[in-house]
Image 1 (cartoon, rainbow, N blue to C red):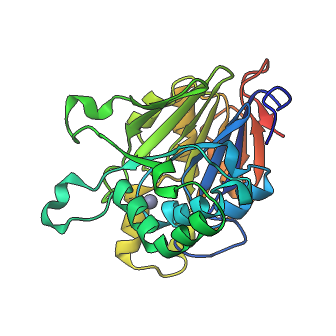
Image 2 (image 1 turned 45 degrees about the vertical axis):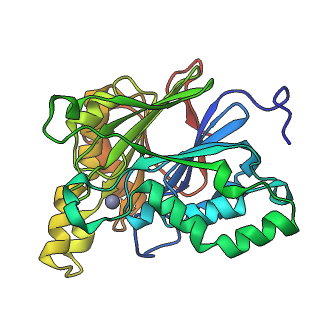
Amino acid sequence: MTDPLTAPRGMDLLTLGVAAGPAIRGPEHGIASAVVVDDAFYLVDFGLGCTRAASEAGLAGHRFRAGFVTHLHSDHVVELPGFLLWNWGRPVNGFSSPVRVIGPGPDPRDGTRHLAGTSRLVASALDAFSYDIAIREGDEDRPPLAELVRATEVAAPEPGSAAAGEPFEVYADELITVTAVLVDHPPVHPALAYRIDSAYGSVTFSGDTAESENLVRLAEGTDVLVHEAVNLDYYRARGFSPAFLAHQENSHTPPAGAGRVAKAAGARRLVLSHFAGLADTAHWHGEAASTYDGPVDVATSGARYRVGGPSGAGGRA
Ligand SMILES: [Zn+2]
């Protein structure tokens, strides 16, 4: 176990995976990010490959405190069960005290369909693997997993209500405070952006969204804005269906839009991630830099950024 007295102090952002999905169109891991504050870390989304990426970044499960799910598209949560099972208990240097998973509930407009929100997703996963979990609790002396994983669904404001545009707190411990706001990712609802503040600085995650005024409000003055990006031309050139193209246009943000959001929020650094469609680095960077004067990074899986500090915006480490 890392000794807190000798652990490096400060705040880092790690872009563990940067690809949209559910499709494998390149070498990058699926969307997932880690925020490390002193000796603890937190995840935002659990895309394909996040378990390996976190391990390779040196993030042992015993340092994990909480995970924040932006929305329930599978490319953001598919490896949540795997991450928990691979980071649980002393045999894997994993967590032995409670951890939190915070995310959206089911869409309240869905009526009688009874679709699963974050809590049922976690409970179902633990049930699906109950044989393995029971075996390991007895055979390997691991602590009871179901008691350690505490899932909470965010009470999102009603769309169209006065509160719908306002950030609200969803989590706090002695190291960080996390606030969320509704973003525009139709037909998905609730879809959330998160902002993590610590004594060192702040990182704001767009989640999946079209260009969002709410996100501008959440990200005001943030040190690092991690924003999704879509290359619509990639899909147009490959004959995707009109419905698929309409979703990309209405629910995602081209890099120039991410730049506009960063500028309007006064973000000190823009990190593009969650790349939908492929493009070279120059495309992503150039489009965002056409609307935003600050530093722009095109994230890759495993990249690390220092957050805050004397120079403010930090930088790629
Ligand atoms: Zn999505």
